[in-house]
Image (cartoon, rainbow, N blue to C red; front, top):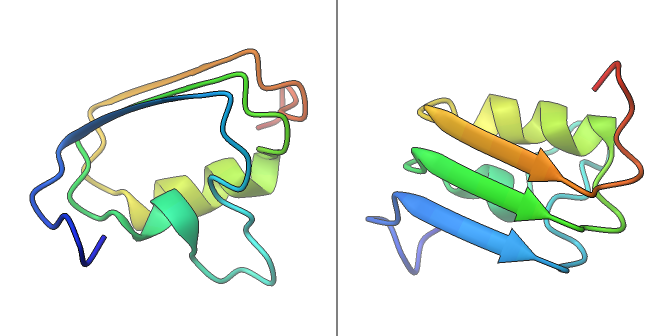
Length: 76
């Protein structure tokens, strides 16, 4: 996030470690506070807790798409 403060839109596919959400600390993509559009496809390790961290850290998201992330449940 410090390297690209003007980043508004991001599409990621087949990435690992997007947001690990360990002990409620924001990390990874959740640190990109300026994001307005985010698409994540086929991330094998993204979980419900990762979604929560992204929601906390990326409060400006107007568009958020998640597909093929098998560790995300209906609750997420």
